[in-house]
Amino acid sequence: MDPDATGGAPIGLPTQPSGEILEAVASESEHDRLGIAIAIVLAIVAVTAAFAAWRTSVVSSQVSDTNRTALIDVSKQQAMHQIDANAAYTEASYGVDTAMKKAYGESLKSSQVPALQILGSTITNALVPTMSTLAGPFAAGAPLTPAGTYDVAKRIEELGNANPSYTALNPQAEFAEADRLAREKTWLTVLSVLFAIALFWLGMAEITAGRWRWVNLVTGIIIFVVTLGMFGAVELFFLSGGGAA
Amino acid sequence: MSNPDRGRRLVVVLTLITTIVAAVVAGLSVDAGTRQDAANRESEYLVLIATNQTVSDIGAENYQTSLVSDVVSNSADGLAHDMAALQLAATGDASGALTVTALANGSRARADAARKLSDLYQSPKWGPTSADGFPDVKGYFAAQADAEQAIVTRQNQASDTYNAWSAKGDTYVAILSVLAVTFFLLGLAQVSKRMRTFLATCAGGLLLVSIVWTAGVLTA
Image (cartoon, rainbow over all chains, first blue to last red; front, side):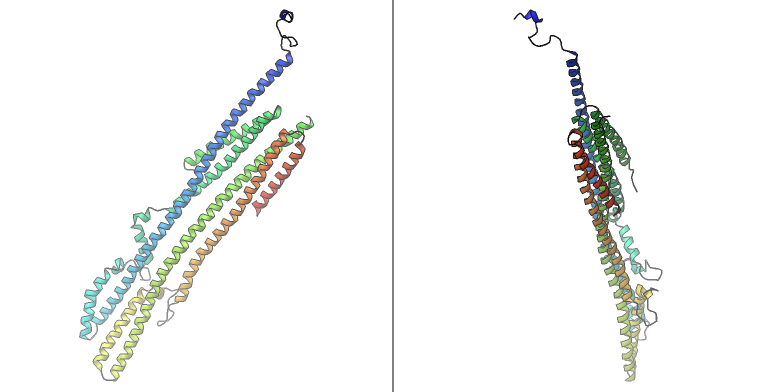
């Protein structure tokens, strides 16, 4: 066959593409471009969702760590309190013994029996000063309650305040910080779920066609943009120390 | 708009509603988890406080009962010495009687010193109602035990609160699982023309169950 008879084109094929074919190719090309665009958006949302999930996990760990530290500090504080209480009650007991011995010695000194007077003097002059060294501040008669008894609670407080390891502990502040971080965690978790939901809508846009593809795409993008804005706002708010009760 | 379009629009609307419900349930679930953690922490904190309070109270009770014991024992010593002095005087041993009387005074001086320092003797609440009476040691112990019990009661309440929020949190997770299935069905309904009505109906039913379930948990 003479190729010139068909203008050089193979037999059976049109020499120029028809209008329908051009439209179909153009539509297919547009469809591919939109598919690629949706895939890019999906990738961006997936990375953002992964970042949000990571931040949620970090904050969640911080909540657990802060609570754990606070509880450990409470234990330490209670242990130190027990040591101080033990010391204060020991001092108070020696204070009572000293006061009783002193009263006994004074009583014997004022008796009419010379031997007992000597015993009384020995008790008050030799024994009582030695015993009083074990009574701490109670030997000097302080601190006292309004009723005139030893104020052991105040002495325990004094011992605690004099101990830098005790005063450095502040579990209540740590509990408050844990509560603040827990509020941040709540927000971040909800936003992570919203990112996942945006992914769902965009996934639907990837597999549907026509007008509904655009509906799914726009809805997914709106959810993503709103969630991203909220995510940024929440992070800025809490990183600047906001959210305390 | 054609019937298939109306069907698809319904699926999209259902998906939007499911999105909102899922976000709300996720929020409630996290909130339940946070409250559960807070109650758990409170419970653990109160265990430490209750233990510390009990040990502190034992120290205080030992100190107070020791003082009462000092008062009682020295008063009894004084009384015994007085009786001995009377017997010595009756037998004509004036010197012995004088010595024992001095010792009796010494014991009473010790008892008085302990009485002055005793919180139980000096307390208007627990102190003796008469000059020779005893303080209400039993009442003091009961009050100490009540204070400890109050902390234990709070600890139990915190533990109950923890269990309640834990149960709620578990239920919210179950509801979220149902919503995940709903999303799956709605996704299929968007792309499957033939099964759309059936899938959308199933999804709608699950969504309704989720909403009613959530409301039930929320108000429980």
